[in-house]
Every structure is written in structure tokens, then in C-alpha cells.
Amino acid sequence: MGPLIPNGVIPIEWDNIIAILIGIVFGFVLEASGFSSSRKLAGVFYGYDFAVLKVFFTAALVAVIGVYYMDYLGYLDINQLYVHPLYLWGAIIGGVIMGVGFVAGGFCPGTSLCAVAIGKIDAIVYVGGIMVGIFIFSELYPLFQPIYEGYFYGNVTLEDSLGINPYWFVFIFSIIAIVAFVISDMVRKKTKKIFY
Amino acid sequence: MKKELKQKSKHIYWNPYYGGFLLGILILFTFYLTGRGLGASGAMKSSVVSIVESIAPTHAEESTYYSKFMNEDESPMKNWLVFETLGVLIGAFISGGLNGRIGWRIQRSPKITSKRRLIFALGGGVLFGLGAQIARGCTSGAALSGMAVLSTGGFITMLAIFGSAYATAYFFRKNWI
Image (cartoon, rainbow over all chains, first blue to last red; front, side, top):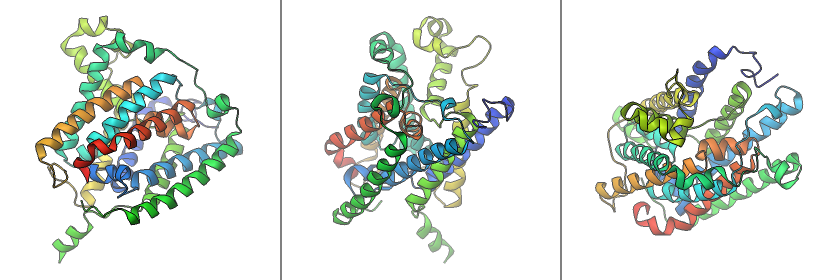
């Protein structure tokens, strides 16, 4: 039963090799979907290209449906999976700062790496910026420590926090995504075309 | 003829639903194998820790944050996310190479100068790097991988990123449209 490496089905020595292989597929899919182009990515915020919305939500839905389905079939134990922890104010403040960085720079870390790989100089500068940002955070850590470590609610899922049935949530989330896809196509038709 | 064909295919990307479907399968597969999701900013953190550790070892040891990621026997670069990130660079290079998209260039709107583009790229990067540390992950590690297991933190970070980007997009419009 999965996850395979933590349960010893695949020896731990394979961990880093699998990391590179997974990374190759990740990079290939992102680049082939156009995520090495900052102007394509930024389109989602101005209504001329909704690739980010479509790729991101399709991926999240396929993954979450797959995880719950494999758990239901007994191939994967959902309780053994790593759940990103909830530090409430860290998640909100960090997210807000990242959002400004996204629309100012046109990349997020994963997409900027894809753009670096094909030689975009703006992406190289962006990655340099990320490292400067991490450096600033680390040097001023005592200042950020209260929101970094405070308001901790554990490694909680929406089932724990809101008490909703995960199957219903995934169903509603799917409907919301489909509606968002339809609306995004309508918005794009009305927006002035941008060529890049 | 061949050159024309190459020119044409340069900006043709996958159907976003196809790309998203494959990405979703990859996240599922990653959870099935390793019990964790994908990441991107983690490797950059390891790089910063590693650089600071080699330039100013005492400073790094004394710092509360760097020392969290340091280990006496191993380099901070010996990390799952660093290997994964090397893979990302290789995979993107292969895809870009197959489609003729490789080359040194600064991508920008024709309405702005290269200098302006680079300044905003640097500033955007600094903000993203800072935010990703505060939220303990970026769009890949916190938002996307978090959403795959219905993590509350992942959903909140995702909403905060997109909410703030839409709210501030107006001020950056000259760079893009």
C-alpha cells in the first residue's frame, strides 16, 4: 500500500533518483504548457490568457480526485500523506506578498526555473531576487518569527477545519472549476488580444 | 519552409487541460511514491542556506533560521527538493529544445524597456522569496500540493496569492498590457 517509499515498498536509496525523474516530468509539463513565458502567465490577471487558471485547477482536481479514489480503493493511505500545515497568518500574509511578487515579476518559483532552463534573462534575475528575498527573511527572522511560528492549527485538512465531507467538497470544487473555465473563456473573448 | 515551420511552432503550447491533467497525474504519482507533493522554492532556500554556510559558517550556525536546515554531516544541498529542481531544469530544457524555444532573451512587453522589465523581475522575485518563507511554501509546495490533499493551509495560501495578485494587477498593468 502506498505511499511506497515511506512504507519501504521501494527502497529509500531510490528517493533522490525518483526526485530527479519526477522533476524532469514536472519541468517538461510546465514548459510545454507555456509556463516558461511570463507574459502568458500574467495573462490570467488581465484576462487575455487563462492558461494558469486552467492548468492549475485541472491539476489540483485530477490530483485530489486521484488521491481520494486511490485511498478508497485501498492503494494509498491518505493518513500517511504530508498535509501542508496551517499557520493562519503566515499563510495569509505570505500569500499576499507572493501575489504582488507574482504580478510584478510574472513568475512563481517553479515557472521561473522553467524559464531559466530555456535562457530567459528576466527569469534568471527573478530567481536571483527570490534568493535575495529568502536571505532577507532569514536575516530578519526574529522579526517574522511570531507569524512564522504562531497561529498554528496543525496539519489540518478542510475536513478537520470546516467539518465538511471531503467527497462533497471535491464534487463542489469540480463544479466551481468548470464554471470558472467557462467564464474565463467568455472573458477572454471580450478582452483585447495581446500578442506575445 | 523548414524555418517557417519552426517559427510557427515556437509559441504553440499544449492544450491547458491536457497539461493540467498530466500535471495532476504527476502530483498523484508523487504522493503515491513519496507521501509528499512537489516543490520549487525549497531548493532555492537550500541554496541560500548553503551559500551563507560556506561564506559565514559561524553566522549561519548562530542564526535561528539557517540552523534549522543545517546538519553537521550533510550539505543542505543533499535534499529531495534540490534533486527534483535539477530535474525541473532538465525537463524544461528538453521541452524548450524540442520546440525551438531556447535562446538568451529578455521577454517583455514592447511598451516597456528591458531595464524596467529586469527591475520589476528582481523586485517581484524578492517579494515572492520573502512571501514563500513566511507561508512555508510557494504555489507548488503550499498551494498546489496542499490542495491535492485538501490542506486548509494550502487553500488559504492559494486564495491569498491569487486574491492579492488580482487586487494589485491594476498597478502593474503597464508591464503586461
